[in-house]
Length: 106
Image (cartoon, rainbow, N blue to C red; front, side, top):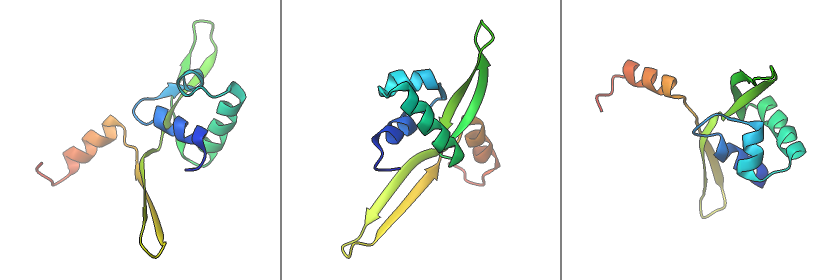
């Protein structure tokens, strides 16, 4: 996934806000068929989630996608051992609940 430029663009475009497939096509400049094929794979592998379902004025249904990943860190030591870690993307409601229920007094 890290080496796939299109998937990296999709993750970046869906980290902070939920966006539709058509918005991803425009924001990332990726062909329609490629976006929807990669969205399907990313949903199946839990890299994305459907944040909201909406309807157009004509009654057509569409989804808003949100990344489940906030950040990915890759560290390699001098001997070539690599460690990859990911931070889960939290929505504002989850963030506020965590802060409220936390014992931290920041």
